[in-house]
Length: 68
Image (cartoon, rainbow, N blue to C red):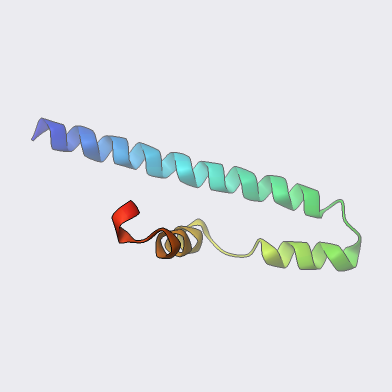
């Protein structure tokens, strides 16, 4: 039972870390988009649409169920 609790805690910490990394990368890319001309800025920002959950689902679709 104790090892299951440890596994769950580690899993939750990794999930939080991945989401934080995703958010930081998104924010950095938004900053880079803001340096572009208006027409390119809008296109760049559209490329950043989507939540972490959508990103993770897309990633899992590519990686496959055995690689989770």
